[in-house]
Length: 64
Image 1 (tube, helix red, strand yellow):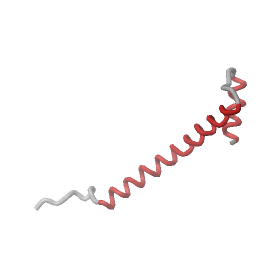
Image 2: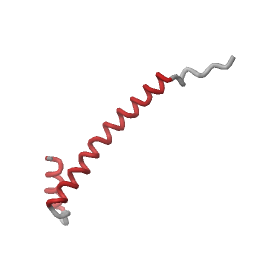
Image 3: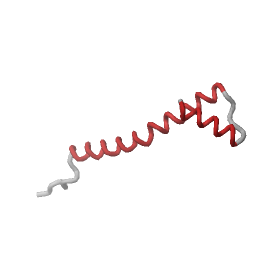
Image 4: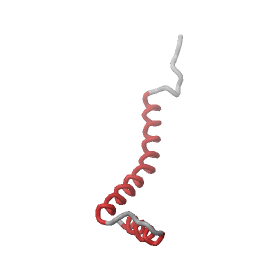
């Protein structure tokens, strides 16, 4: 009689999904915040042109 392998159960699939979702959220959530803060800063200020302006711009982005 054929029996499905032990690594192919709904519980283990759900558990694998939670692992990948947890890792993705740890990576993606800060990325989304960073991108959105850069967009907000660009609404009010022009894009930096020099290294000093980049330093100030990204310091303010991270401060948000």
